[in-house]
Image 1 (cartoon, rainbow, N blue to C red):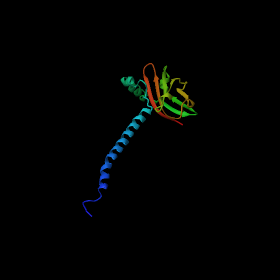
Image 2 (cartoon, one colour):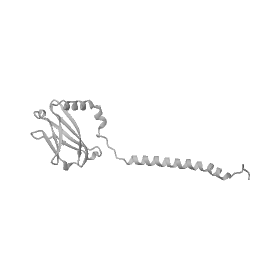
Image 3 (tube, rainbow, N blue to C red):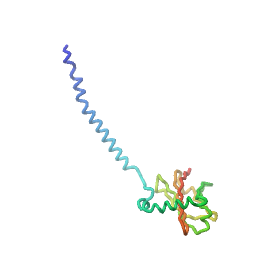
Image 4 (cartoon, rainbow, N blue to C red):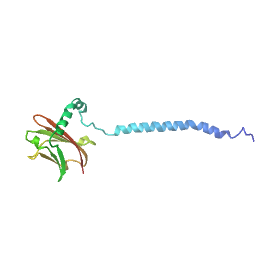
Length: 160
């Protein structure tokens, strides 16, 4: 036997196999990339609000509303009791004629958002039946307007 004449086919088969490995790796990479791009087109996303960019231009007003709410002697509060979401407005605001909105914002699905006009009873409480809201995570936005100032508070609410 000639030691220089070992089986050349083993070496040749390895030399011919590496291009197939590169081709297979490239095909896997392209398939994964195309699959990811196709997946991103199926994902539903919503902006926080439809007019997001316009609202960023007047954001200082929002900061002032939140600051006004923090400076109240008693904060705006909420509670869930007897199948109702109750929002409590401090007594110091009840002496004036007030208006406002309650917005139930659903981060996962904007189509479930609900807006209610502020309609307080004599003790400064507004109730929203839980039957009008689906279970899950909500953001409660409370905007109270008086003749002099506006007040804004935001809360995270989980409804079971």
